[in-house]
Length: 276
Image (cartoon, rainbow, N blue to C red):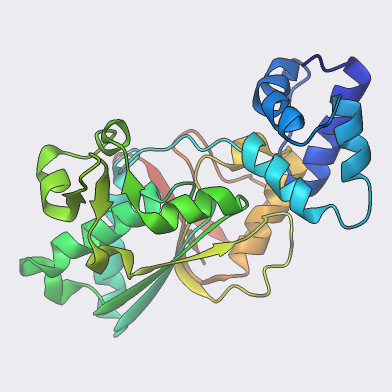
């Protein structure tokens, strides 16, 4: 379905206002490919009709459905490696040495669950080995995303063969998953129970419903935000981070110089930021 220049401009503004996502000026094809079928399903003749419906009061359900189709959910297990290895080798032992028996982790923009479940897998490996005395006895993981659809998928913790191979060794696949009669892979219940899910739009500042966290992962999502909004979101998350807490950005991202109160820590490889 064809998307006119004026319709695309209006949609750009709508998506940025509601989600923070900043679409480039040459992404009409992306919007058209992701939403054309949705328009037909809802008997809408054009993108103009969709924009009119979204402008009406009480259109939150429709807006959420559009957001679900527009948000990118590209992810894999143990992405970049160091955010998980450094968590277990340095951060968890540091918390335990301070006398903490419990730790809280927040995974923002968690997509279909690979990041929080990678953390849970790393913890399970630690608890079952000689390392278990060096980490807090309980670790709670909150996973949030703007897409209610992708969160439901994450909660099921069911993955197709192609998804399960992206970053997971055969040994981990065998140890932490059960294969269903249909060929999909189900994460074992003891790993699921550490993770709680909640729908959260990072635009909804301040994050009043969020607790104080020892570690925050906000990786590979702020690259879609404007520079100004990226700063606002990081400052909002910093308010949820305990003094001395750690903040992971994506491997290609960096902390804006205008944000005070963080020191850079080298993970060799990679970087993490510690709140002063």
